[in-house]
Length: 234
View 1: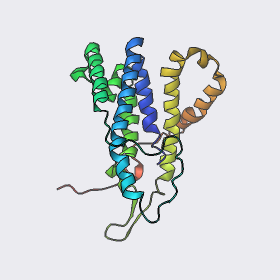
View 2 (view 1 turned 135 degrees about the horizontal axis):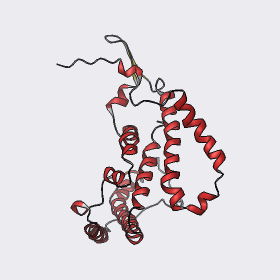
View 3 (view 1 turned 180 degrees about the vertical axis):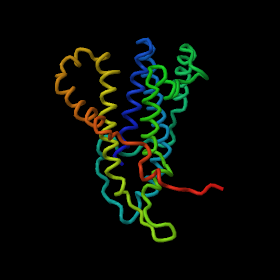
View 4 (view 1 turned 90 degrees about the vertical axis):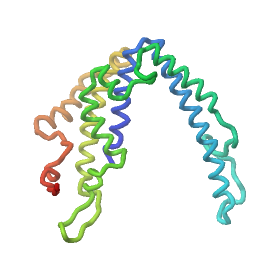
């Protein structure tokens, strides 16, 4: 679905902008603790799962007899080794940082609270909501694929809404990129930002977002077709 990339783009914008509200040393520490905590969590999980996967599939008759050298990032792991101690150490350090920063419940803020802290409430309300529906199971998006006549035959197809999803992803992707430039790239990477030729960048925004605005054509969250849906409520 063309709208899926909007979710990480939206989160990166909010997360990066929020990091800029922290003192440099606390932002650096938060990043280090978050990365290493996730690394050890991944190692713990893969050491439980991957040996079982090899045990289940490696000895099938159709399996390869000569095991080649795996590419980097692939291969077996050492079973029976856990990293819970390391994970707990980083979790405790992250909680200590949270307490020092005054974050509630000894945890980092939610994405919503991060957005509020850097005045990206509207980005969260619209873009995060819209994009989340494309990366999680969502009944609204499922129903968009069902077409037919009540009481008759139905077909399931994603093609009907494909142009809408493409337009939504492209137009609002440009919007979020522009927000990224304003909130992150210009203030954080000033020298690199000065290398950008502002004229074509401005023309690009004017063509995409300005043109869409003049045509009254920003994609809606709920389309005209869906506004005509009728559902009985007892």
